[in-house]
Length: 170
Image (cartoon, rainbow, N blue to C red; front, side):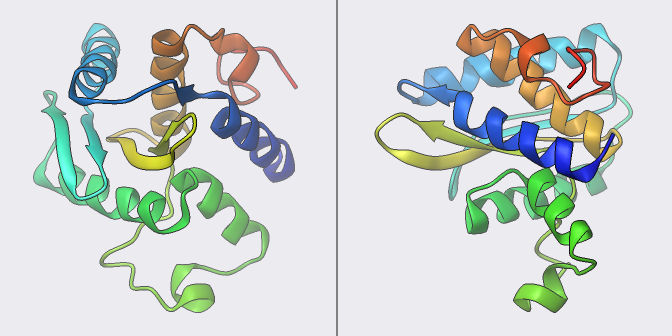
C-alpha cells in the first residue's frame, strides 16, 4: 500500500459515493446497514451519521467505550472543516510530514485526522454531513464506511476498495 495509491482511490471514492438525496430516512438506512455489517462481524465500533450540527443516527456496539464517541466527534469535525474524508486528510498530512496543529493551527482535542469519517455528498448540494465509524484501525474504519456506502448506493465495493482491503488490487 502506498500513500499515493490510497489517496487516489479515496478521491475516487469521494467522487463516486454520492447520494441523489439525503434525509433522516437515508441516514437511518445507512446507519442501520453499517451497524448490521459490524454486528455480523462482531466489530467493536461506534457508528454515527450526521448532517453538520445535527445527529441523525448513533449506535455503539459491544466492546466500545466512551472514548470511541469522542473519536467520532473529532473525526467528524475534520470532515466538516475540510469536506474530505478524515483518512484522506490524515494521509495527505502524513505525506507532507506535518499534522493538523502545525499546518492549520487546529487543536487535536477537537480534530482527528484518522480514518473513519466520510463525507455525505449529495448530488447538486455538495457535502452536508458525515458518516463515521470508530473502534478499528483507521484504514479499517474508513473501509467499513465505504463498503456500507457501496451497498447502499448500488456500487461494487471491489471497484472502490483501497488496495488490499478486499477489493480489486490497484
